[in-house]
Length: 87
View: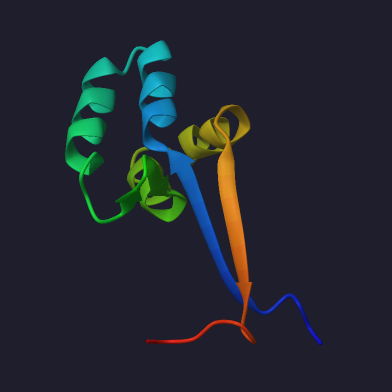
């Protein structure tokens, strides 16, 4: 069985991302990001999809996301294709 095929779900804590931005002097960006995604469908129990954050950060600088990945924890869950299903 090939366990490398499946669905990977990566998320980061929205609050931690915003705090990280504030430390770097981007308080306005942090506030806007938090307000925009605090109750959004892409945020679940305070965790926001990493691909959403990546798209936002990469629009201004690809290095910003690399730095974020070094400093803020990414939570990953993996569902093999054999267990994935569509309701």
